[in-house]
Image (cartoon, rainbow, N blue to C red):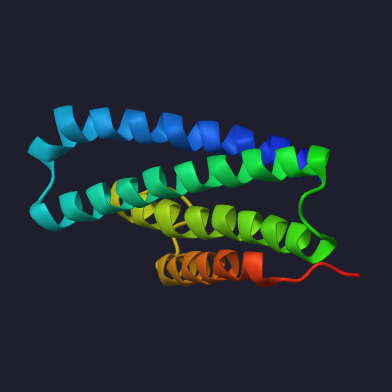
Length: 137
């Protein structure tokens, strides 16, 4: 489990750097060189990346601290790990697919964007259930 938290924190850093870089590119280049529809997709997908990066950062730090303090029961711990992995997969499916379509990147498969979005929604719902799992007695 420690490897999951470390990888997740590292990826949160990567996402944060990508958001800052893309925000600069949006402000200085893309707003002048893209049509409105493409620009809108780029801005909204970057916003999703920014928001999810913060959520992943918080969950990774919480999971890492829980591993030390053992605050969550086993079911909660596994659900948190599952939600975290789902956030990463959903984020890659959604954001990469949108960006791959805009920038003609390899491995573009249009159908992955809605799958990624639905995965993110399910993960948020899973996170909503986390506090309601009971401790085993």
